[in-house]
Image 1: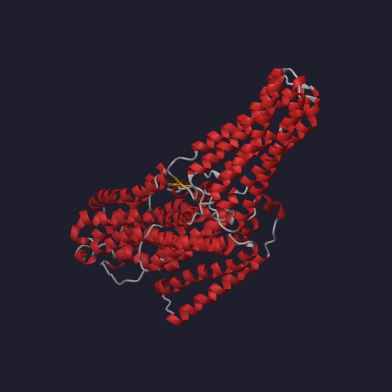
Image 2: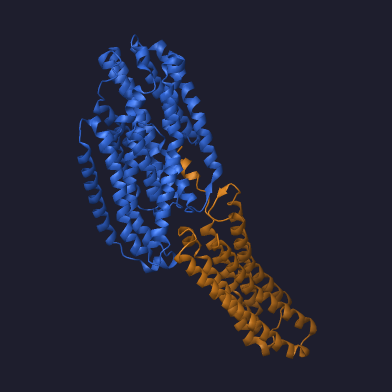
Length: 224
Length: 416
């Protein structure tokens, strides 16, 4: 009897979603030390960081499953359940891309050409920035629920998403420049390595793409 | 030993058993919202509950007590054999108490009110005769069970919408909260005191005329609002906590408001649910003392006190644990949401108590929570549980009735 009131509250997905983006960001952030080690050829350190990336990716995955299980169809929520699940999915993809790209680099013990190393690290940083901005935006979820998705809080989140879009455009520009530089030196590289280097750049760039999609999903919530 | 003493003794015993059950379980629902939102500590919650449950029972419980006591059974049919009513009321108390005990052991969401009303209808329809039940009155009571959660839900919806529009969606929510929260305090205190004065005080022998009643209610409400205002001004923003939750300080302002609505909720609960437990006790006592079914006899205050006391014992023994458990589970009910639900529920319950309607506190609170949810205020509500609550309220009535019938025939055989 005493639990009657308590039980009508389903498990709120809001805090877990905020926690989930926190984990995926921490995962993406590892790319910086990871690539720094890879460029120096310190594969021992790179493998350690890669282990941390895998651990965080698993953690995000487990939390994702837990959140899904806690969102049965019988829940009554101010925003559509599908939109929240989609948000969760793109958040998770940030960690997935991080795992994929680090996997290729460690697996092939890839040497990143010195000609592009500095530019590439900047590019990685910017992608991590995008993930960080995505985290900042998602962390406004509880405030959005409190304010009922209207008013001053919505404007605040819209501004955060605009900034996220700017960062993503920046990564696109950096990616184009990086490809151009790589194109100039690809003749001097082992062809297979060159192909994989393009692949690594593409996958890394997808981290910012996924972060931007997190922003799009949040925007969809705002329009309800 | 005198039969009368046996009757009164048993009635008091069963009444305390039931009040204890209410105090141990039911009160948790009224108080846990405040503990869950950290507006009160558990100790404070128990203190507030003890004081205001008792006050509610004594000051505003009279109308509901008299409904339970003489509104459901047609006493005229029994004027020749008053002992039947005594057996019946004792059976109802024991039936409701037992059913509540079984239900809480199994975690079923049942209502005290529904059990006791079902029990009384059961023993009178089967034990005495179908004509003995005032079916018109029973129909009104059942209607009120549908109406009370709906009303509370509607009021909660309006309150929460106003909170969002006036405070939460603005650029300066903290300044706005400090400005408007005392107004909500005024309304909370005004409604509850006005209904108490208008409907409750005559049972404790006080009569105040209408104009004076309004003046007194306004005076008390203004005093509450001023105390609240002073308390709110002392709250200073915490920039560190606000970084991760912009509404942190705003919610603390609502926390002060919740202390007041929690008092209101405990008062309302006392006025309605305690009355359920002691209505039958009052009936038995009055028959035992006078030897006849005196419809007009006054309600002894000590009986109301018995109910209030039973609840406090229940709170002190098991209530603490239950409040802590429920409080942990309802963190979604932040102060801004919780107060809207509590204020809506308390208002609805006190008005119902004033008109003598025995309604379910918890169901009304559930209705109010759903109202906040409809105003897009709650992150996730489990509709399966809401459906289970509705089913349980339909099942409780025949269950209470069946147990009451069994106990009635047992008492008829063994009691003098």
